[in-house]
Length: 160
Image 1 (cartoon, helix red, strand yellow):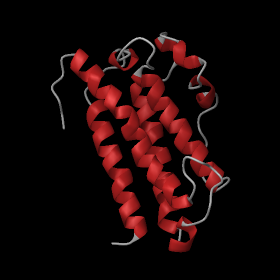
Image 2 (cartoon, helix red, strand yellow; image 1 turned 45 degrees about the vertical axis):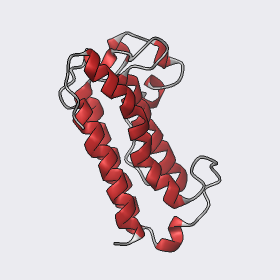
Image 3 (cartoon, helix red, strand yellow; image 1 turned 120 degrees about the vertical axis):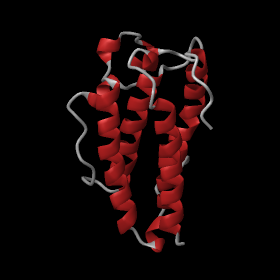
Image 4 (tube, one colour; image 1 turned 180 degrees about the horizontal axis):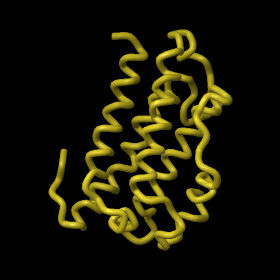
C-alpha cells in the first residue's frame, strides 16, 4: 500500500459511514437539528460538498466539475439558521452532487505523486496536500456524530 492508497481508504471509510447514516433518512429528517444551535443535516451535507469542492479547487484550480449555480450560496454560515426546506436541495440532489464531487476528488488523488502530498497548502488545518486529501474523509466523519444523534431521535437503531 502506498500513501495514495491509504488516503483513499480513509476517504472511502468516511463515505461508507456517512452514506450509511444518511441512507434511510427522509428529506424531512434531514432538516432535524440534533439540539438547539446545531445545524440540520441537510445544511451540513451541503456544507461538506461545498467545502470539498473549495478545498480541491484551492489545491488544483479549475480541476473540479462546477457546482450548480447558487449551490454554495445555499450553504453558508448565514443560511444555516434557516429551517425552511425550500431553501435547500433535496437529499437525492445532494447525494448525486456528492458522488460527482467525490469522484473528481479521487481522480485528483490518483494523479498526485508522493512528493505532491508533502507540498504545503498554506492552510493551518490541513498544512499539506496529503492532509487536505485526508480531510475529505475525516471532515465528513466529524459531522456524522451529529447524524447518529438525529437517527436515534428518529427511532433508528445504531448502525456502527
